[in-house]
Image 1 (cartoon, rainbow, N blue to C red):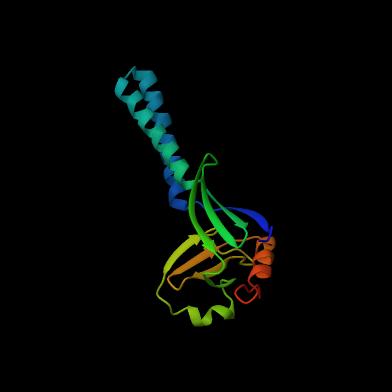
Image 2: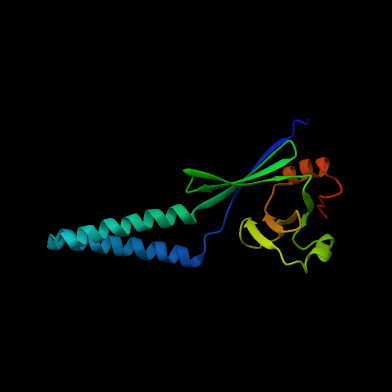
Length: 166
């Protein structure tokens, strides 16, 4: 049993629509609150509370980070919502992994035509240079990750024929 342990934290991109909706809800909550103060209206106060709750929930589900934890030939992916809640999404073992390579690698050419379920646990956008990796797992799952170079190095040491860093 090896003592390899690496953590990697990745902030996912918030969509433009979610950000605009959040700002719209904030403006509507402020307007509703001002209306309830000026008109001494209970319905405006109730509307402000509902809109503020909507802003809270929207922020909870759009402020997302992914944490990759590699320990003893297992890669665990956790979802951290608004830096307050954590949810374990999945655990992958290196023995069942088929390949892990950069998204645009030529090593993935034979895998591109497969019809598989895609799970994206990456930053959600293409950066320059593109540091995202694609993992095919047990023939039925394509996982997109944004691992650190240290995580790739440890995984390559554990499974050198399955992990490519081009």
